[in-house]
Image (cartoon, rainbow, N blue to C red):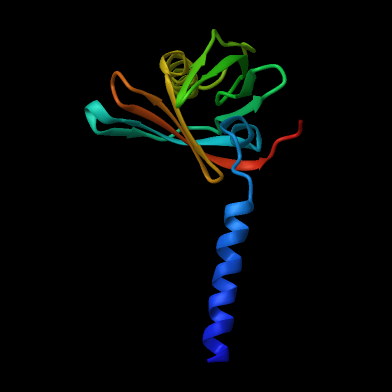
Length: 148
């Protein structure tokens, strides 16, 4: 009887703790990490592409700017969140170093795709940027804690 009571109390405390923990906002989740692109899934063509080099993204809540590595060069530009799941990226600017052709091609494709992103899904362990018109998804994972 005591064991059943103890188990019930522990379960109740766990539920209360989770209920009392404030849920992070979309902006808090976006800015909690530097994100690394794992793959781009092109739904209309059932094609998945993996970056040939490290592609990252970091969100800054104070300036509403995003920045990162596009594989070879650094990029930066504005973003805007829209409720409930919307996101828009403005025109990206960046450095202009020359790299291997296949990395440059991917970099250009990635930056063009960002212009069309219109939906965001973010959790502690994943970031999906979606293009609703053709069902393309850019899938990211957290890399490390972002410095604010």
